Length: 85
Image (tube, rainbow, N blue to C red):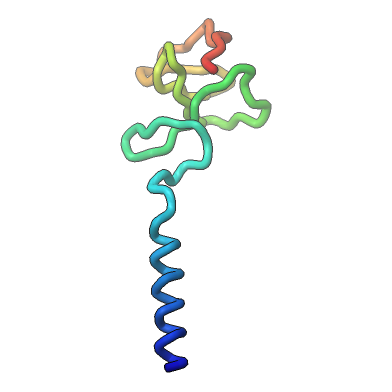
């Protein structure tokens, strides 16, 4: 009986863990090519690295590259200071 109770508790715990959110991202985001891309929020973060990707409401996917923001095609975005919240 004791083993039955332990197995039942284990099954209930596993079931509860599997019922979590289907969303693997922890921030506001969009999914692009099965990748979580966080929403761009002005002002920009200070710790940006080459290749960081964000989603901007006006420009779509934007990528930080060589101290500049570019769109998906690699064109530099001059006026990114548009609030999107």
